[in-house]
Length: 370
Image 1: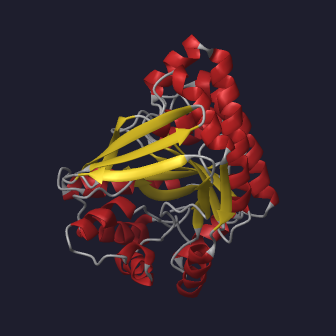
Image 2 (image 1 turned 180 degrees about the vertical axis):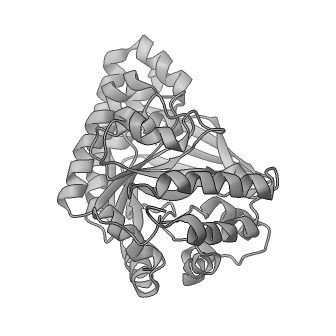
């Protein structure tokens, strides 16, 4: 079996040859491109898939939305000032502005001014989403899927939009502003989330209809930010609806849950997802791999992760790295419901030797029942 057939056997309810090993190299690759060690366009080329094959792991994750967003009836202006990226959206009922700061040493960006700052911005935010339309953009998915089928390197995954709650919490408002708006005008906030859902549902339908085999709701969850209360009120309905739609389409569904697990893992395992991805174990997270299955409360949801991203750097010794991966495999090879993965990404300081080493350890100790 190659890593593609190995994973598809597991997702389809069968038993793979050995524990599947697939990792998210997107962040690491972004840094390599930024440092001039990989060429521009590398991550959208077939060479990116070949790199996974050379390193000995399966490909599955590259943030890809299979649709184009078109904002109508608004004046949208985007510009850069040094390392700061601005966007201003003027609507008939108000103007929104955001700014994201690029951090060149870390090859990532973070918001320093959110698009939505208070309830005063919600009318404009509603207008923005009510006047957003979406068009399918499937060519990249088609090309990548064909190459993955040809090489056996992995599976084609694409994103749905986030749930309306996480669109606001993770990107457009932040958790503090969201909680303040919930206290200031809960009815207006609820009406706004409903408008966002109507908009996101249109995009989600295009994602489900795309050539992608696996569909992720990219919630990017950690339980110390969003706990069971917000999950039940705002996330469960969206996730349950779209997990069912993905299953009806004959495809596989997942969400991204890293950070702390105890506050949300059990709830997420009742949504109907095929798998939950990027689970971070202790000592970085709050649950050991051996505790995941009992804690989640069912024997159906596939659990994916196990190797913290920091373990791929020189901050961890070779001896500790081997010990940890062997311990994770000792749990995962007992029953076919796990995928060995990175929790959540190999970082810019990742060591190529560590990524290669995982394949050796999987070949050595990843067979079931040993």
